[in-house]
Image 1 (cartoon, rainbow, N blue to C red):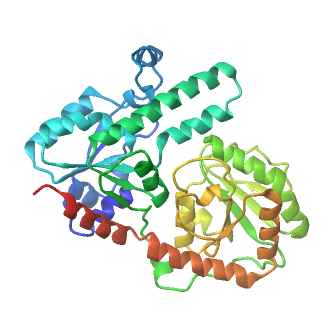
Image 2 (tube, rainbow, N blue to C red; image 1 turned 120 degrees about the vertical axis):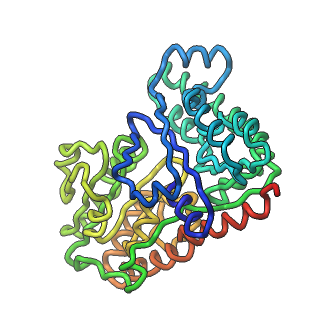
Length: 385
């Protein structure tokens, strides 16, 4: 969301930013640049999204999606009404499906504005994967029902928006298959590449591959797919890699990571939650993304590319990024992934080649200013004059 905002600002757009925040994801204004705050006139509205059994039961009886309804706030709607009534906007850019409950408010108070849905992913797919992975019968049943209702809502809301800004071609094609006939624009995840990567060739790996390479995984370990993927990698892939390269290291870090977990695994270093993810990443040679399920895109891969860090991933890990095996190492089966990493570590020139390829794809396909310029051009073609 921040990348889209900066991409629009850097291309001359005037942007007003209204954000909801929760106890889990608070809005810390002191940590945000004051110039940026002034430029976007940021307003934040508290939102209570914790589980409310009564509200969930009412949604169930009414056939509504509780996933969606818990993001509706009368206070947020009133603030939105005030903003739209005081100033005319060409576009109301909705970030994610969970902002769509406010479409009726927007239509009423900004009837000429183009309403655009920025889709991060097909939301129902995330919940579909959850119910399929659930072990408890009743929990599985409840999740399946929530998934089906959410999917119906996600299809229904397409009739209420004017345009869709999909995060990948795959997501865009999904909306076409659902029958959306309006304009669709693909705007991938954007970044501002570190200046040292822009102005200098990518660094050589910090370790000698013949002596061992420092691999790492960085991610929120309170998210099920990350935990499952790391467990799978440590069980099915890492022993083979370590046998072939006994001096190699695998470093783990991330939010919600128990510092005592997996400490008995040879060659593994558990750092728990680190203060600066970028600094941590730059201390290692190869990012491993062993994702087996999930939706949307892996931001960590694009950030690694921008820093000149090679990437090894499962096929699911690169889903939606529209990159190829020329840009990073990609395998699905554990034996194939293990052998591919072993072959990679045998040849330092291949590590350097992947580093250079990653920097190239980051600057050509994921530059936030380029993405912002293309999005602004798209909106210019469809706004109501």
